[in-house]
Image (cartoon, rainbow, N blue to C red; front, side):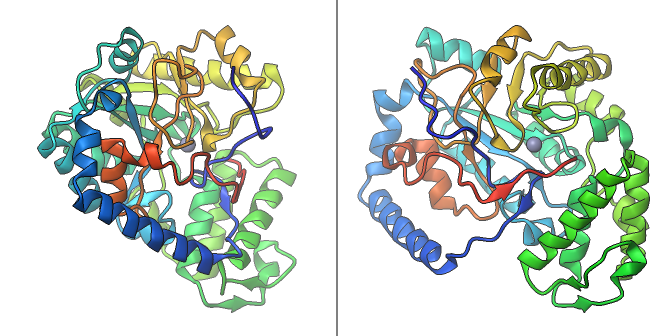
Length: 380
Ligand SMILES: [Zn+2]
């Protein structure tokens, strides 16, 4: 029996717009306590014991990644991005520790059949960004690790930076400033870029302006170009480096040709509350992936980690075999296939936190299971 304590759960990262926590000091104190506890447990051999246990062998850890920085994206959004060296460190740990990195479909079948090898792990990347192609893909190949890419397809075809993310990124580049002549870019209030909350408000204003005028992807990109000009940022350079863009058709084909799974993440990175629109997102996404890669995607990942009870029968109708959330946990044989937990790894995670989750200790301690509710949904 699945219990839904909340109507919807939202992941901290992804394409949403960030709302800062009002309690940074308490969070930092808790984090220190948690890290000290983990260090004591690792020092006393508990990590090794749990890793070797039958309990761990009956469980599957699904790792969730998003972006790997091309430049400084991890400084802008550390919950979404990670430095390439940090990703390398994780992969090295999995290799040296003798972890069994499995393809998603194989791992789920073996989880049900109770034939998982020891220390089984699945690696997933959400969104299918260009930086995945540039940074993660070659590293995964060199380690011989399989991975699943949950590919959203609108910006794969549009081939421009993701509008709300690139606006947020450029405003972050000008943090500390207050700009008064905002009417030049069609905004009513001055741009207060001194705080995350102030920058968030500006991004919301730009998204609302784009929605009010029903702008297309290319038109939104024109608005981002005007914002860049207004902020005196070289937008052509950001575009040329492919920062905050998705893989294009050719890159996605290459990833699929190399044996990586390309799976469902909705066409426009959204999960409408109406069945017809929700299912259209899945169908459009599936059609484009099928056309681009020649494969048939059957696994799904909830954009922003948002899920509602109503989504499950809709996914079943669409013949979706599994769906992953961003709630922390190890999957068991009893886990609901359409609500599989994952551990979200990012720049904010320390190496010892990562190790606690791959060994299984993190799940036993379960400092925090459900993804926090500090983000509000954005639009692609
Ligand atoms: Zn996503």
